[in-house]
Every structure is written in structure tokens, then in C-alpha cells.
Length: 407
Image (cartoon, rainbow, N blue to C red; front, side, top):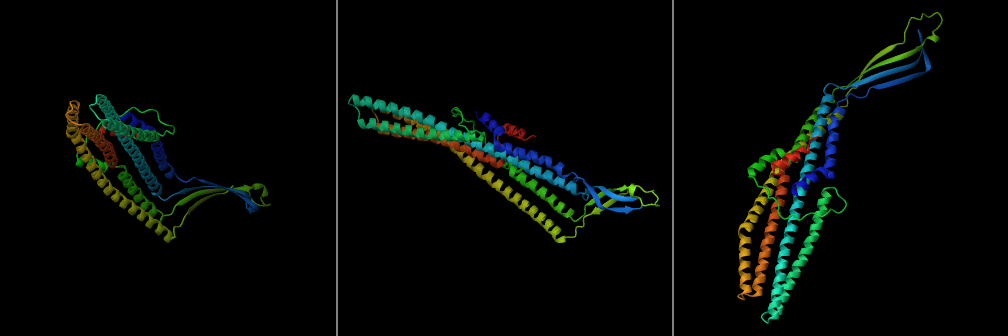
């Protein structure tokens, strides 16, 4: 169920799809910005004819093409490609965040289902204890107070089960929202046997985070983009050239008498260029580009430090929860069960009181719920750690996630 759910949300989540389409749109832009500007076609009409030796000029046609200074188009293309890289890492970050949300919801689902299972077993034990107490009352060997205490304890457990069932409904609804579903989700099977990911060493996860974290990679791409922005601002100091050809149509029927008709319709070649003389504007553009680059570099440095801190914090929490979980599983739960079995046997033989039995049952319940809480806490800590690293701890799942990023 876990792998199926995570694979499904990574393919159908609307937020991921939006980020993917943003990235795909950005990948088309380099070809757009690297193209020459559209050529200009012009037409002119002389409202008052201009008489020439070969006739009167009536109409004029022209075509021109602007050619940016060498390097401008290449820089614009590289800058747009860097923008596409930023969009790509944002798409990867969306995958990461949804995956972490899915992991967290599965941990919450396990906590609810595990607690419900334990509480139902405890409720059944309390009902049996109440029935046993009733039998003792009927044989004048027990107290009615013991019956009431057992039934009240069983009803309290039933109330807790109802509350957790409501919480489970909320978890399932959020799981449906992660799939992009609006209608209530269908029934989800009980999740009571989670796979606990193996925790690698801190040094290993730190190394992985240096190259896998999407926020840091997006910041690195932004720095590269802003480096090109500085170059683009510097190139604005150089003029662009516009080449053109004009053609004038001459009306030969208006040639003056006694004028030789040896001319043709004239062509005119033109060359024009802009004059970048507004140094204040150009200087402001370059200073702004330098400031943006500095801002991106500072953001990259801060994100790198934040990722390092987040990985260390999440790793410490995951290790602590795993150690607590293992201690409950290997020491506390077996001890609590042994105490319950011993006390239960003593109660059946009349060697101990119902109060002692209920206390031991409560201790066993607390131990079993504690194991569930710590297992769920470990799964949530792993989700936080994977988000901080930027990829799942399981290499096979990580490869599946990477496959989704291909165009």
C-alpha cells in the first residue's frame, strides 16, 4: 500500500503537474529569446507627388531587420536556459514536498490504525474482566464496584476508539487531497505493519544533501542566471544595427517633356543603429544586475547552511525515535506483557485484586500505545529527514522519483 500510494500521488498530484508544466514552458523560452527580432515591412504613399527626372514618385516600400550586437542573443539564450534550470529544481522540490507529505500521512495513518487495534484488544480484555467480575458477584465472591470499574474503563476505551476513528477519517481525506480528489476517498485498508527505513550514518546523509537538495540547486542555478544577467547588462552599452532596403515606385507617365527616360525605380539601402548615450540608465541596469547576483549568492549560502542544520536536526530526531522505539519493542513491551500475564493468573486464582489487574492492563496499554507513537514518530522523522536531504533514503524509490523528472 505504501509504495502504491506514494507512486500514485507523485503522478496525479495537481501541484506537481503545475510545477512540471511551468518547467516545460520555461524549456521552450531559450529558442524564443535567441531568435532575431521580427523583420519590419513598411509602406509609404506620397500624397503630393515628388517629381523626378524619370517620373513622379508615388509609393515607397521598405523592409528592415534589426541585428543585435554580437553576444546579446547568445547571452539571452543562456540566461533563459538558466531560468529553465531554476524551474526544473522547483519542480523537483514539488516532488520532494509531496513525497514527504505522503510519508507523514502514512505515519499518521499507522498511528491511528495501530492505536485502534490495540485499544480494541484492550476493550475486549476489559469486557472479559467485567464479565468475570459479574460472575464473582453472582457467587457472592466479588464486589459490584469491580464490575462498574471494569465497564467504565471499557467505555472510556470505546470513546477513545471513536475519537481516533474520526482522526483517521481526516488523515484519509488529506491523503485524497494529495491525489487531487475532491470527493470523499474510498475505504483505505488498515495499515498496521509499516516498513521501517534503515537509517544511514549522518556523514552519508550530509554528503547526499550537498548534491540532492532541490532548494540549494535552484539557488545555484539562480546565481548562474544572474551572472549572465550582469553580462547582458554590460552588452547594453553596445549598439544594435538595423539593415534595410527601400524601393520607390516611379510613375513614368508623368515624365516632363523633353526629359530622357533612362532611369529605373530607385532602391535605397539603409544602415541604422541606436546610440546608447544614456549612461545613467545603463549604469543603473548593470548595478541592479550585480545586486541581484549578490542577493542570489547570499540566498544560496543561507540555504546551504539551513539544509545542513535541517539535516542534522532531522537526523538527531530520527535516531532518537528509533532508539526509543527499539527499546519499547525489545524491553518495555515484553516486560509489560509478562507482568500482565502474571497478574492475570494471580487474579484468576484470587491472589490479587481487580485493582491490581486493571493497573497492569493500563500499563500494558500505555506500553503498546507508546510503541505505536514512537514508531509513528520515527516514520515522521524519516519524512522530515528525506525532505531535508532532498530525496528518499531508499535508493530504489529515489530512482523511481528521478524517473518522473524526465521530459
